[in-house]
Length: 412
Image (tube, rainbow, N blue to C red; front, side, top):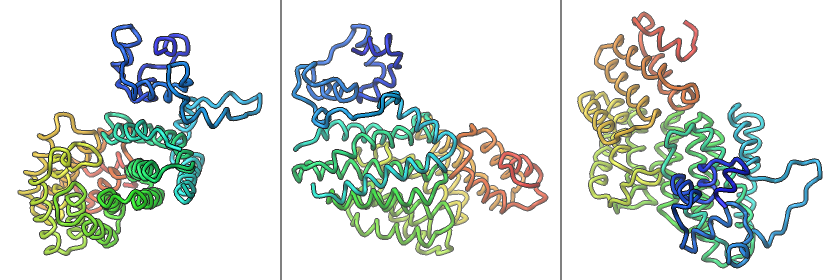
């Protein structure tokens, strides 16, 4: 099946892997006849990912078979999920606004309606593994591409929420929904679409509440707090972060550590030095007590590398340059291949420290080099906001400031 899909249909191994929740290298190996599938859950994921009727693989009919085929006009070119994904990718590549925003809004409204419905068993295992896969972050993909895939998977999963189910199954689906909606919101935040990001975080919070998982809800609030934090509303960020800290409680958890880290940055921006230092102390105590799972390098964990990225900005804002430089270096040391965005943000923080220490020209050079070196798809949203804030804070006659200004495309 994998070989036929690849050679006759022209579908890449990576796209097959994505659809079936299997690593790309394993798919190509099996297509060559060098691997086998013996696990029932994997067979089920293959059936669901490639839309192969369960009977053809010796399985019971899959949940989606019960829906029956979707009628469509003869002139339409089919309802191929991969074609829909490509169409959505094209819309989002042109910008989240317009067609892309309409697609996002339609998907989010469908999820909200499904969550509100009164809720046969669904194959939640596949969707749990899908959410786990997305949780590992961008992995070199452009944010718009990740957003496209997330939204398309949501379009396929949402009908399950509205079907009659056991309470356990519905709770599991709400949990997956909370995670995936939260990740959509994270990507929208990184793309600079903070209003739409807030809306998706609201959906994620609603799903987290229905899943009855306080830690997931705390994580959603902690991540949501980063939207106003990075886009000019630190007091609102502090309020959300404190709600997350309350939900997470005193026990060590990734959600509690994240909430304290965000709170430290929000208070530092607002000039509340004592509260900021208290939050810094709190997160530093928590991070040393996290389990390996809690400290995993995913969007749901609080790894040491991510901790140092947060502390980099908090200490930079507090004017503690020496500690900030140390935590910036540690952030880079802990990741053999930091993401383009992470590396750029750390460089901008380092530039801000240089500006604070009376070296505006060096600050302009570091920030200009970091921002100008980013691919076009990364020069928006959060990276632009941070670089622009530094640009505006530096004296107008700073030598080398025109390099940063040119990369930001702002008037001289």
